Length: 185
Image: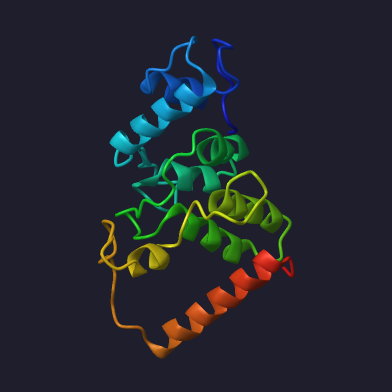
C-alpha cells in the first residue's frame, strides 16, 4: 500500500491535505506561512502524531518514523525540507529520535539495495535539503541529552550503565556513521 493521492486534487498526496487542514492552511497563504502553520500545529500536537499500528515496529512511534519505515520519500521530504518541523523529539515509545530510527533502519539494511535510500533520509533529516552540512537539523538522542541545562523529555529513558558490549556497539555505530557520511558505505 503506497501513499494515497489526494482525491480533491488540491494537493498531490492525501497526507498533505490532512496536514494542511489540521494546520488551518488556506489557499491564499504564502508558502512560508503554510510552513509556519504546519510547524506550529506539529509542535502543538506532536505527542498525538503517532502510529499505533501493530504492523509498525515502534507502536506509538512518531509519524516521521513511520514514514522512514514505509519508505515514504515525499513525507520525509515535506517534513524535513518544506515544513521544517522539529525533528528532535524523543519518542516515549522507544526513547529515540527520528534520526536514531533512520540510523537503525540503515544498520539493518546495510549492504542491501535499499541502504542508499535510507542514507538519503538520514542526510535529509540531519542536514536538510540544501545539500550543505553546515547546519544540523536533526540530532541523535545522545546528542540532545548531552547538552547541559537543556534536557528534553525522554533523556532519562532506559539510561542503564553501559556494559562492555554496549560500548562496542556504540563504537561500531560511530564508525558506521563516519563511513556513511564520508561516502565509504
